[in-house]
Length: 163
Image 1 (spheres, rainbow, N blue to C red):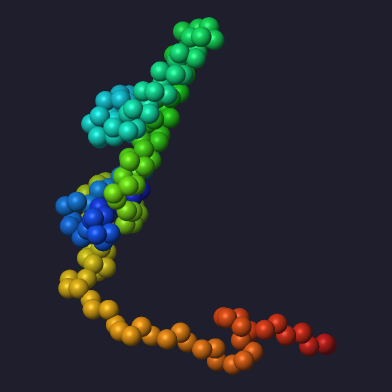
Image 2 (cartoon, rainbow, N blue to C red; image 1 turned 90 degrees about the vertical axis):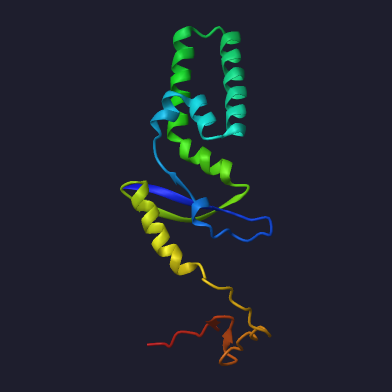
């Protein structure tokens, strides 16, 4: 089973969009293409800020390794480890890039993307109201405690009876 996080866009008025064609599913786990072709994967997924940060960090890291006199074997090992890190964290990078204009609507476990979409939209149809719900006015007053011995939701402490 694969785990998908589901993201929906937030409109300019602050409301969550209910358009099903705008929903994004981000798979958690290792992404082979992000591992093999990291920068191209970032371009393909339009992760521009992630790409810029990646290029700056890589350039600074390899410049530092060259200045320290690290061998090409060490530099290759560092490059491989960074590629593994990008492959493992690719889903998190996509979620991070969606954080500004999108909100997480749920998490779905499924065998593939199609099943994840089906499962999510079956439960989402129950949550999204078909017509706007009018707010109740005036708002209901807070409920008073049942007895004076109750403080908040918990009764006052009582000493235990002696046996």
